[in-house]
Structures are given as structure tokens and as C-alpha cells.
Image (cartoon, rainbow, N blue to C red; front, side, top):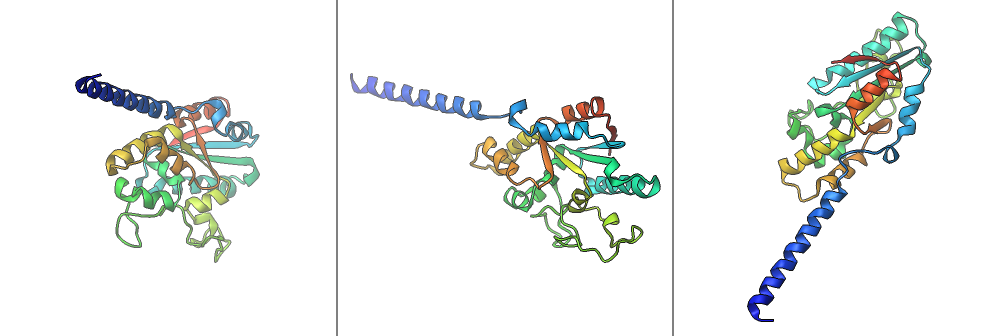
Length: 235
């Protein structure tokens, strides 16, 4: 084999290796969740729950977290206005779009510069948030409230943090499809060296306890309404 032929052979081999690597990366992508790959049992529990009042919120925009106040109002209205026991109500916050990132902890917000990406300002610093400012309660990690009176702003019943709502039995859903799209957006935005699927897995590992990742939020909404008889509200 002469030098020219050898160079051609090496070049062709390199091209083939690159192509195989590219195919491997594509094969590893998980743009859809199959039934065996997520916690469908936990979703079915919500679906079959025999509560009298079941409500699911469809949330895609963060909008300063105003939807969290809506959920708080649903809880308080049912419990105190209509006398519904907590055991007879179930509220689900279905998050997709930008709101999907509220399901993930400070590690994600800092590492992937979520505040800068989504234009979320930390009220304590006046700078792009490097933490999930919507999660923590002012009552602290152990949720010690100065008052038990639902009419007092320093009670659990007026706390609109994700932490407080989770403690009151609200289930937060995270959209896997949205997360796949967001990971690709983050890789492009910040020129990250990681493959998008590695970013997805990294973020998923930092979901808050009580968050359920579903294959597709819009599909989950359809199932919850049709088979679970959840009333639907979008904010």
C-alpha cells in the first residue's frame, strides 16, 4: 500500500469511527419514556385515588410563581370554605415549559445557570438566581410556623412555597419531554461539553422528594382528566 492509499484508508477509517460514535450518541438519547422506564405505579396511585375532589393544574409559565398562590387558595378553599377533609382532596401541579425547572434543587439552578437562562432574579441578591427561589419556606427546613391560624400570613396555610405545598400533600409532576428539550437548550445556550442526555440524567437526579417525572405532561393531563376524573385548571 503506497502512502497516498494509506492516508486515504486512515481518513476513511476515522470517518467511520466518527459516524459510529454519532450513531451511538443518538441511540442513547431517550426522547420518549416507555412504560417500563418510569414510576408508573406512583402515577396510577394518583389516578385511582378515591378522593372526593381532585384537581390538576397545567402550568408552563413561571410568572413569578403566582400559580403557587392559586394552589394554596384551592387547598384553603376546599378545607376551610367547603369543609373538605385533607384526606378527601388531591391537588396535582403539572409543570412543563419553563415552570418545569421548579421541580429541581439548587444544584441544578447553580450548575446550569437557570436563573440567568430564564430571567429569574433572586430577591435576596437582586441578581440572576443561582438557587430555586420558589422552593424554600420562610418557616425553615422543619416548617416551624409562628401561628396555626389560617388567617395569619405566618402560618402554613398562607405559605406558597413549593416546600410548604408538598408538605400539604400536593404532588408536583415534571415533564420528561420538556426536560429533554430543556437539556438541549442548556447545552446550546452555555456551550456545554456534556451530551444532552447526560444533562437530563444529572438534572433528574436532583428532583425534589415528592416530584414525579412523567413521560409527557400533556399526555398525563389527558389521562388524569379522562380516567382519574381530575378537574382541570390552567394558569
